[in-house]
Amino acid sequence: MLCKVCKKKIKPFLSFGKMPMANGFLSKKEFNKEFFYKLEVGFCKSDFLFQVNDHPKSPHIFNNHYPFYTNKSKYMTAHFKKYFDWTKKYLRKDSKIIEIGSNDGTFLKNFKGANYVHLGIEPSKNVANYSKKINKINVKNEFFSFKNSKKLNNFKNKTDLICAANVISHIPNLNDMIKGLSILLSKKGVFVFEEPYLGSMFKKVSYDQIYDAHIFIFSLHSVNSIFKKFGFELINALPQTTHGGSMRYVICRKGERKISKNLKRLLKIELKQKLNRLSSCINFKKACYKSRNNFRKKILNLKRDDKKIVGYAASAKSSTVLNFCKINNKQIDFIADSTKEKIGKFTPGTHIPVVSIKHFRESKPDYTILCSWNHRREIFKKEKLYLKKGGKWISHVKV
Image 1 (cartoon, one colour):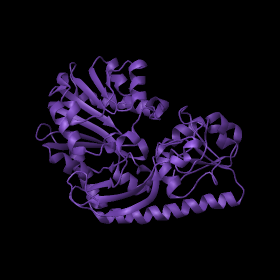
Image 2: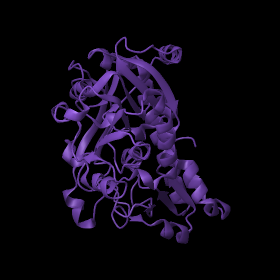
Image 3: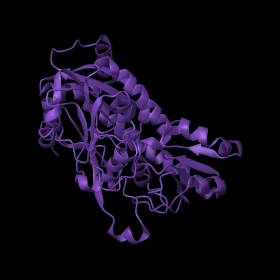
Image 4: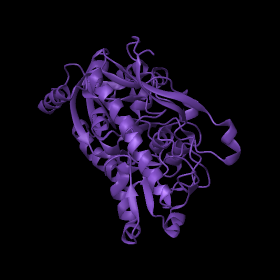
């Protein structure tokens, strides 16, 4: 295994075994042709970078039918409004903005409404088309890369803000991506991105953050190390509650802006937690196996007691949990979801039927697995009646 940034040899320390594509929801006739790969992770001691080893090439991940629309979540829509308000400190009235991985345009819609010159870069055709037609966003349906960045003449060295959310960890060639940023950002321009945070994942043992599309799980130390190689520096970081614990990173050209006291404080915390050491990864590995054994035992015991168990929200991240714990359609009757592209299909690897939310409400299960535990508040609010009628929520993490 080679580090995807510095190319040094590293040894995988944890394997989750054979895995399907996390967003590879499929029909019955596709069961025999399902694609699997080995999901294992390693840690680069030079760049302090937690990363997936073998990963499928991008056409398997981001295709014409990417089954996630940001606007399906009121919580995330509200989050992106707050994110937009926060970015204003880095903007002038005539600033230009680029979003990498703009999905359905939920975030960029805020910039469009404020009359900023904007551009979304989105590789999945269905969500890119949605953002153009419904949200009237300026979008290019392509991957963000150095090659494609060179074509954006109107944005070269003129972009005051390049932003992303839950996207950068999906890009295998970070070196190429940063070169693209470098030719687009203005002198004092900032690159701001949010991703699930290594410290939060270790603390919660939320190993469901790891799947084919999540190639990296970043820490402050890894981000600082990677961007320094290209003449950038991390100047601030802000913890976020999204996705069960994320971090917002603020980066600019070296020496152009002041490094915050807050960042220095957070870096000290990381040193205490040893997030820059392989030893913390080994402890996480032990915790993952313990979590798997406990969760599987809990599900099997409930099934033995003849309890009806279902899932709620057919998320990509739940694919890792269900496959790693060997929980499938023998234990789980169905998983309910509101995304029409998923309903009527089956979960990757475990082949659990995906049904509508209406079906969930009518079926009255005894126990429901929170497959998107990070959206628990929004889900609990929607499904108050389920709890009132005696239903119980369960998860592989504490909620």
